[in-house]
Amino acid sequence: MDSEARGGGEMIGADVIGADVVGADGGKVGKVIAAYAGYVVVEKGFFFPTDYYIPSSAVVSAGPDEVMLNLTKDEALHQGWDAVPASLGGDVAEMVPGEAGNAPMSSPDTTRADRYGHAQPFDHEIDGDVTHDDSGGTITVELHEETATASTRERDLGQVRIEKQIVTEDQTIDVPVIEERIRVERRPVDHAVEAGATLEERTFSVPIRGDVVDVEKEIRVTEEVTIQKEAVERSTTVETTVQHEELRVDDTATTGEGRVTETRGGAPAAPGDSV
Image 1 (tube, rainbow, N blue to C red):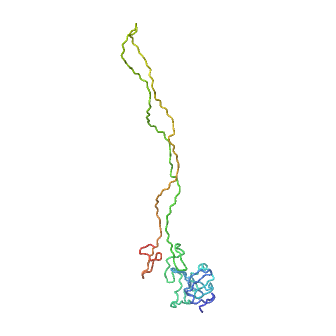
Image 2: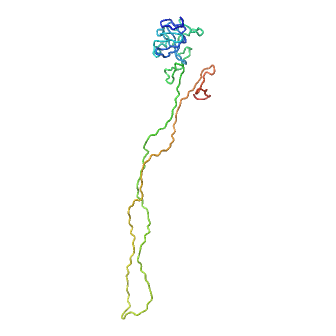
Image 3: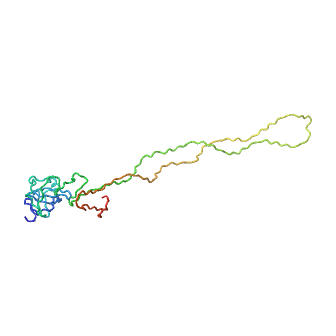
């Protein structure tokens, strides 16, 4: 069979290995890693790939660069084709080997291990914090952090009570007063009295007058007090705690060095930096 595009009813040869598998909606399903009689094995994912056994009846056209399906990407991924077909049953006699050393692929495995025999550490469908970019084979882990913002709300701070009170105090007033006084003035005289005059005792009463101080009170306005409310802005400080997520990479492999390279903003991360 030549390398030109063929219909799904024909035998699909080894030249499709490595071709992109595309759904009817243009969505990329994965890459062909092997071809069986009646099936093509499509690998989806990079770090934790899953093999899909797509029957040739679902293939519209096949070529060395692209295999087109008659189903959309989502429809193809939900047909249950990730299970090894019963017709294969682990028998690789009908498998068409790829060009890499012409070595046949190992027998199909119904476990959740990848095609290298390594158990998958987690399933993307279970871990909601991990997303899988099928186009580039990249796992994107989002790191989150809390940010604190302050807002104000009005509340009752209490009340201010204003009272008028009566206070008694002593007050001294200087008042000028006028009083009448008796002044006795004596001067010497010497002359005769009238005939028949005799000596007698006599009392003279002289009334005197003076001012008396009367205190009168009147109520007068001495001060006006205006009471108003006004809003005054001031600065205050509040303290809180925020949390953020950090990524820790644990390389548990026992052989080889330099398996993990970390960058921050395109530049190599310094040792000990949190990612």
